[in-house]
Image 1 (cartoon, one colour):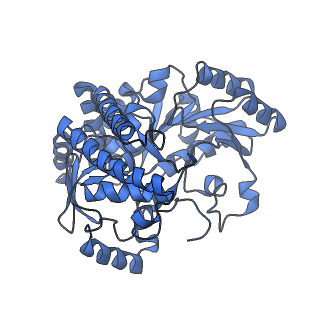
Image 2: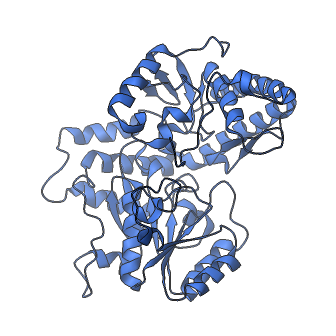
Image 3: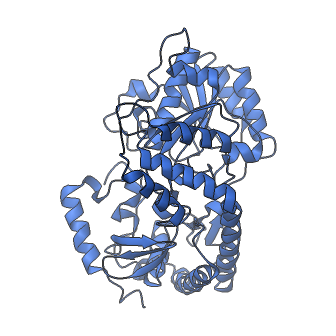
Length: 441
């Protein structure tokens, strides 16, 4: 279908209804319609495997499913079966369910570098608990975050460092400092400047680039030397890098780590894991001051923990991580070849680990461009590809990848026309897409 003819009238009306009731029109900023071309933000009816259908009746091959959370594909049989077994047994009780015992055992068996685990519902609660715990055990006020990584928490200690810092006192923000990824010397300088003040170092162990040789090992030593708690945010790397996360792949053990996203295949579950002596400070078997670690009414909802166990089992038994890498390698090669063939290989750039691919859209000067991203997304949507990223799920098959590459090639032909014209505006169909973190709407 020609992108100029492609329209989503029912989705457009539903988006208007959402904006009238829900601030931002979505419950996650990254799902907002400002992230998509104007009037081309599909509202989803349902999903199955690697495909989703919008309320206008269009089917899409979906990437980045559920903001990377649905890594096995929608309505995965093993996960759904595990969830259904619990639904008739009750979801929440006044005392722990036996499912909590089983889920903790399964998690710690899969992530053997952790000694204890506590489950919650979202990533922000887990990372904030890690920060609170680090401050408690060190008696230090400051948090050092990797400034090259886009998101750690909705809570004040992190959001205060972003352009969307309205409502957050400067005194809170001042306690968070940033270090660059891959630069041990700069981090050492930061820790020396704030000698004895930094409670923890928190970073994603890897993102769109592999860690430089020896970096994570050196980072571990740096944290030890300065008495900081080392926290790995494994929300994305957990399961996608290896069943035991990036720490399992690279062999560097953090003091604390946080998991989520892929852990529940779309069901709400996250985890804070780590060293027993630290984690126990939030428990009942220690003599120090008690830390209010994580205490959530719905954190141990039985069917979500059952989903997590099914996910962990499926990853291990079916070699899902390897499949994600194989699918991603096929997709990346196809997209790069298509872009090169259309003369835009230096402008549409695929980056990242094969299991976690993203793409950059660069303008005539090879600078990141939201208008060119808009042009590209419009053509993908018209071709039945919903792809805010190229993050794969294991439900994709070779035919899905091949179709995606065909649509990418068509989009790249238009991309080339816009580059030749020196102006993508005629192909945008409205305002360009927007970055999530910006000060003004």
